[in-house]
Amino acid sequence: MSVFDHSEFDNHEHVAFYHDEKAGLSAIIAIHNTNLGPALGGCRMWPYVNSSEALTDVLRLSKGMTYKAALANLELGGGKSVIIGDPRKAKTPEMMRAMGKFVDSLGGKYFTAEDSGIAVTDLQIMAEESDYIAGVSAKYHYAGEEANGNPAPSTAYGVFVGLKASVEFGLKRSLDGVSVAIQGMGHVGYRLAKHLYEEGAKLYVADIFPEGLEKAEKELGATVVAPEDILSLDVDVLAPCALGAAINDQTLPDIKAKVIAGAANNQLAREEMGELLSQRGILYAPDYVINAGGVIDIFHQRMESSSNEALRAHIEQIGDTLKEIYVRAKKENTATNRIANVIAEERFSNKA
Ligand code: NAD
Image 1 (cartoon, rainbow, N blue to C red):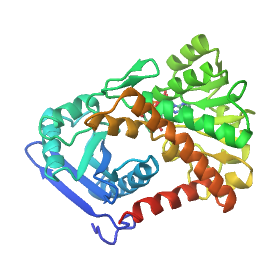
Image 2 (image 1 turned 90 degrees about the vertical axis):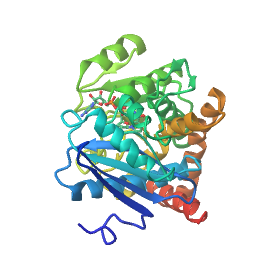
Image 3 (image 1 turned 120 degrees about the vertical axis):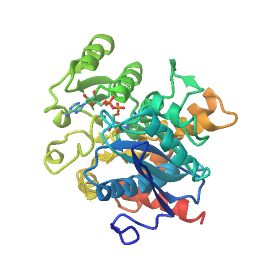
Image 4 (image 1 turned 180 degrees about the vertical axis):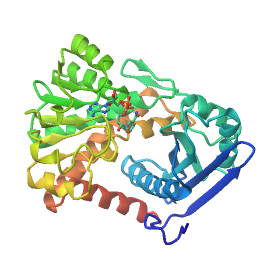
């Protein structure tokens, strides 16, 4: 398994492999870039078929975190860690403790947090072994909600702020009366729907499970739509808040919304989808920019002194960053996802 000539290597600063046989842990930490500050990125536990697949994932994800942190105005770099194994079968407290030791061995160059397969309770065990575990307990609460380390409320608030800025830029109007189709009524999707409802938006929602839908229908007056119809609804805004690759070769031709602004990671099946959206006059809010509220929250949890107001103000910068991207994309006649990458690269490279 090669590392330096791996297709996803892309100038990573540090890649560390760790094996603790007794604890059953095989893990990789990848640190892409620390020009702006220590690397932050979640720990993912996944039943990778082999270590090569795990390496590809960790390299790709850690690079993404460098870009995300740079555009979220965070003094942080990008990193990520992966544990090879099925979180439902192989996870043990000993394994989490060993992972904490692995994180600690990098001396603060990398901070870990939650990702797929890892819960706050797992992080709390890691935190017994290291000071470099983030997202273990939330200090701040705002928008009427007390979080417990779960970044979803902050992510949802950031998506709301970003969606509002996108509507202002693309449709030249406020959210009052704007129709929004939300794919996924989970932790983020439902909270986003609530913020939009409070601003007078008209909601259409879909999920593959009924719980969130029933609540949205009853409490937010949302119209429930079949999952196969949500992406092609004739609405002003589409908010993908379920899985990745919602915008793909099959779905793109039928999208009628003029703005796409949602929480899901990797919404575009391919980067070229950005150009196709822009050719069709659809304003796309780059996913890693609009969904950065959670990582901003985790950063504030670690600050010596912050406040509800400081966290909220920082999350609200997502709207300004999106407008900066939209103005430049228009001026340079380039897709918004490409411009986001260029601005991020300018920010972290200029610090070198
Ligand atoms: P979640 O699992 O709570 O919610 C996702 C919802 O989507 C679930 O209710 C699921 O049933 C539904 N869903 C799955 N497939 C669907 C389909 N085909 N059609 C309609 N609904 C479908 O996850 P979440 O925490 O709300 O996150 C949502 C998205 O935002 C994910 O892509 C996640 O990676 C991304 N994201 C989340 C956070 C966060 O803080 N939670 C931060 C950044 C990005």
